[in-house]
Image (cartoon, rainbow, N blue to C red):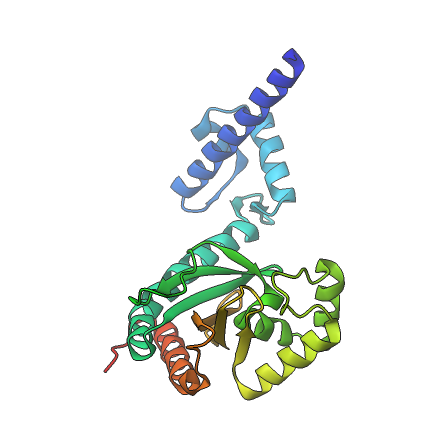
Length: 259
């Protein structure tokens, strides 16, 4: 029992020391030698070296030929991801609101993370009977319109690999459970420029989805969710136009107006 508590306290102490080293590195402008980092944090050079070496193994810290430490690629990727997601949401919000007002249904912004889509923004319909996706919620790629387009981007082999890896779990009786059928559905959607979720994630709910083409470190998409009896493929041109406006706005790092 005492050993477990000691190990836990030791782990927490290492995290606190790594945080102190990262703060010191930031204070030094993002590049500093071991001697400076140890002095600023008050750590013994040997202790600072061990922690920095472990952080380097995990790509949190990098060390150049001159022996100076700097922030590693993993930290830079995380920063870019957070910044890019925030910018994308800011650009997308007014355009999503415009699209919602045109179709009177809920509009979603999603990104891919591994084998799932994550809902990162929404413009909710004011109708009493409406579809609401919780921001931060997730769904398997093969059960959503946008997710199927994301799968199709990497070709048939990638879809087969996804099917083997996940087992294509069924969320409803309409969920595609065969890899060949999933690939055909995803491929045809990518070719025509939009995909349909026909009650594949939730009974009674349908969805139209398109991909965004902004320069992002992850795939992203825009979709309209509605009760299946109200879903209309005639909305696709407006959905595609909204996606184009988001792409243009994000590339300019500006929020375009909607007329």
